[in-house]
Image (tube, rainbow, N blue to C red; front, side, top):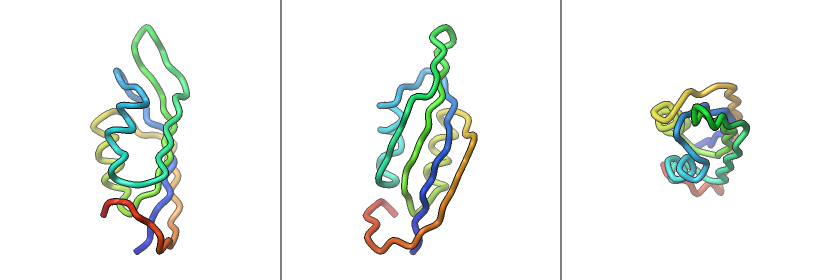
Length: 86
């Protein structure tokens, strides 16, 4: 079964990188979350997210509940060593 390398920007309010990691870490592996920009007045923040998963819809569904997804890149790969959640 193929896995997918996802890279996207999530725009969210009242969120920090640790909480975002906790929300999606169980759905893949190699998770990286980088805070791109934060507006302290409105508590708005953009995060760059990278993760490898077998089911991108799980990641996107969870992130859509948190904020707005933009700038999506998806690369399919065949990786027999994938150990993420199915």
